[in-house]
Length: 158
Ligand code: HEC
Image 1 (cartoon, helix red, strand yellow):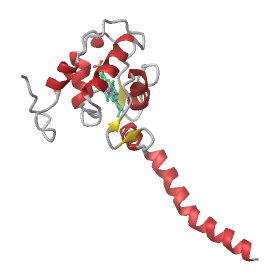
Image 2 (image 1 turned 90 degrees about the horizontal axis):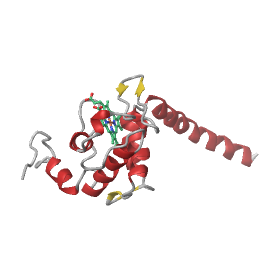
Image 3 (image 1 turned 60 degrees about the vertical axis):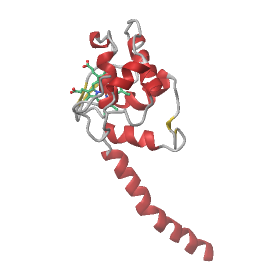
């Protein structure tokens, strides 16, 4: 009898919590999923996301919107395909987007260091059906970062 009471109490306590986390999962937009991936303690320590492997970074941070194979998606929003994408021929454009974001794409500049931005840029330039010469450098990333992280309109150019 005592056991049954305890089990019931546990079920009661667990019920609303379980329902709540299901709600979050159903309503989470890709942006929120990306942020929660970033917040995942197992992959995101106090130093930020620690992988310097372009594929790992892409699959963790980008695939939620652009899909694992880069084919993009149309649904609640429109996520352009990175697959066979001529806009990736030169790194300056993807680096700018990855660092600062644009429209519905969040910027990753405050989560990733310069090397990580180079790694993920090089990955998308040479995978997902793209065969470009990876040309991103840590210097390119550094000058793409805003001087004041709170104001993305002030980019540093020297
Ligand atoms: C929350 C969803 C989301 C995530 C996560 C995301 N993107 Fe995007 N991305 C977008 C959207 C939306 C656009 C279109 C932006 C616009 O309308 O200007 C875009 C555009 C781009 C473009 C430009 C494509 C073109 O042809 O103009 C590149 C390159 C890109 N993303 C790379 C990345 C990389 C690399 C990552 C991971 C570091 C990433 N994105 C993560 C949503 C996302």
